[in-house]
Image (cartoon, rainbow over all chains, first blue to last red; front, top):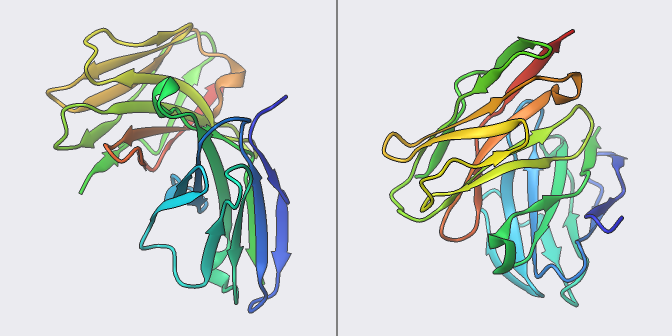
Length: 115
Length: 113
């Protein structure tokens, strides 16, 4: 199966620690998105890449958050000095623009718990 | 600001019956896309159906169909012959001109056997 994959699936960390998540998109998808989803809510957009270029960042993305997609393939999302409010599911999605008119396909998510 | 509203936090339906989930959205754009995604418990978000705003014909995917009312900015999802595997959170989403998805809060669908 060549769907979107995310690693790790679960992460428990202590407040103040740094964490890094990885997303591998569907092969040849040029767009990659990061979302955050809290319990009982829809996803909130964080940022997206077209190839290796980070084109937009949400105001939700504080300076403690950084995302990279160095070679236009996989992406990493790092959260520095984690806070309890960062506890959420972090979703990655990829799409192929312009084909399929940018339908986004999602990975299984990384569930972060900050103690 | 563009918004998506799902007014039904939870819906339940008897197995094999039909259920309709409602969604309204607000946009000033004329060309856009609308989506319904399904998120089963502890599982990933799955695309159910999509609708291009320029198409008058309602999209259909097997047991899933939409009622797209552009003037009313309404985009409801009808699930026919409901099955136990349909139980999930259903999210309505609008894609803006920047290709960003704006999401509703979701509707939890319960299937009664």
